[in-house]
Image (tube, rainbow, N blue to C red; front, side, top):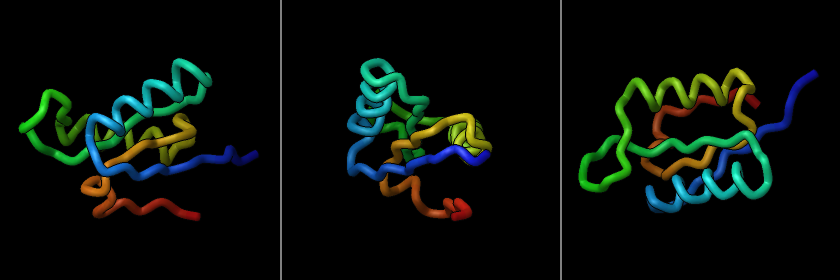
Length: 79
């Protein structure tokens, strides 16, 4: 019984965060966001937080993961 999942790439950190929030609140989709490591904006990630969010996505606990293109490096999701 495999759940469908989707990985959405966006260009900006704020868009990743906001889209994840909107999908969760308005549509009830189990979603989270994944952004690159940077401290230039208010929205930033610790490496451990990033890994935990990705682990939850791979385990099927999160249906949708919205990520910036900088987060795509090193992502290995089996088909």
